[in-house]
Amino acid sequence: MLPGVVGLIQATEVIKLILEGGVPLIGRLLLYDAMKMNFKEVRVRKDPECVLCGDNPSVTELIDYKAFCDVPLPGAELPEDIDEAAYGLSPQEFKDAMDQDPNAVLVDVRETFEWDICHIEGAQLLPLSSFDPVKSGLGPDDSIYLYCYKGKRGMLALKELKNAGFKNLKNLNGGIDLWAEEVDFDMPQY
Amino acid sequence: MSLNNEEINRYSRHLTLPEVGMAGQLELKEARVLMIGAGGLGSPLGMYLGAVGVGKIGLVDFDVVDHTNLHRQIAHTTSDEGRPKVESLRDTILAGNPNIEVVIHDTRLERENVLELFSHYDIIADGSDNFETRYLVNDAAYFSKKPLVSASIFRFQGQITIFSPETGGPCYRCLYSEPPPAALVPS
Image (cartoon, rainbow over all chains, first blue to last red; front, side, top):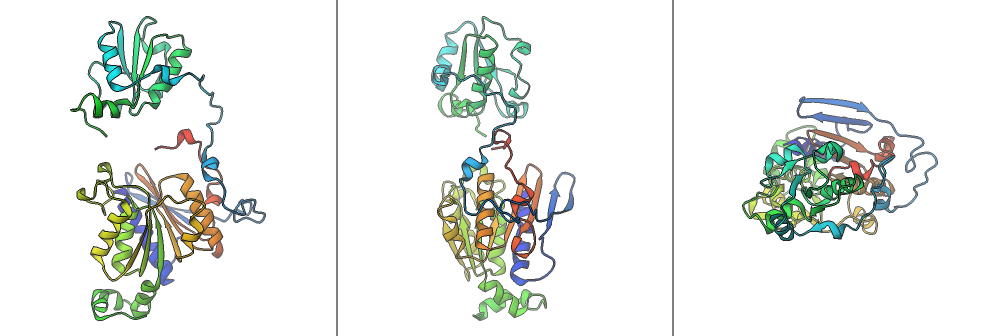
C-alpha cells in the first residue's frame, strides 16, 4: 500500500506544477513513514559544489551510469576467487549427490524470514548475515551442501568455509527458487 | 484547444473549482508528462494523471507483469501477467479516461535514448527502482531543463520531492552525490 500513498503525492505535485498552483515540493524533501504513520519535511538546498548543477560542474554530459553505480563496499575484502563451476550443482545433481552421501549436511544460509516462507526438509539454518564457519557447529568431515534463494549467498558462504579449511563443499545453483522449479514441485516460490 | 461536452461533464467538479477552472483544465489537457516506471509508483501515478485529464502521458518501462507485482502494482490485474507493464498500465489509464493520449516506450532508459525521449515532454516523473536510472534521469532532466518530480520507496518509507535546479532548488546529486556501495543496495 505504500506505493499508493507515495505515488499519489507524486501525482499531486505533477498536477500542481502544471497548474502552477499551491506550494510545490521544490527545496523540500517529504518523508513518509507508514509504520510510525508520520510525515517529516526536510529542507534541501542546491549544493554549490554539485558536480552537475553547481558552480563548476564536472558532469557536462551524460556518463556511464552502470560504472558510476558499481561502487565497492569500503574496506571489503574480496573473497578469494574460486572456480564456482566446480562447486555448483544443478538442483537434480544436488539432490542426487546428497541422497548418496552419508556425511551430507544441508545448510540454508538465507535469513529467518525466508526460512519461515519455505525450506528444504532436513536443512539447518545458518543465516549468512551472522555466518561464522568456526561457530557454525559444522565438522571438518561433514559434506556440506549449501543453498540460499538464488545461489549467490550460498557461494559466499562456501568461500568463507573454504577459507576456514572446510573441504567437502557444494552449492545449489539457482538456490531454492530453482529447486522449486526442478525438484520439489510442491515448494512455493517467493 | 477546447473541451467537448463529454469532457466538460467529466471534469465538471474541476471546472467549478476556482483554482482549476476551464483555464486550468485546458492546461492539464495541454500538458505532457513522462513517467519513468510503470510499477508500484507508476500505477497510482498514471491512473490519477489520466483520470484528471493530463493530455499526454508517456510511459517508460521494459519489464513485464509478474505474479509477485500484483499485490502492490494496482494498475495490473491477474490477467495481465506476462504482458509488458507499459501496455497493461496504458489500458488501465485509457479505460478510466479515453480522452487522453498514452504513449508507451517499452524500452530500458539509456543515455542513448533518454534526451530524445525527454524532448517530447514538459515534466518528468521518476518512479524507478534503481540508482543507475535515478542518476541518469536526474542528469537528463537537468540537461533538458525540465522539472523532475521524484518519488522512491523502501520497505515502509517513502520520499518525495521536486528537483528543479532551473528554479533554484537542488538536483538529485545535490542530495546524493555518490551512489551507495552496490553490495548494500537491496534488490
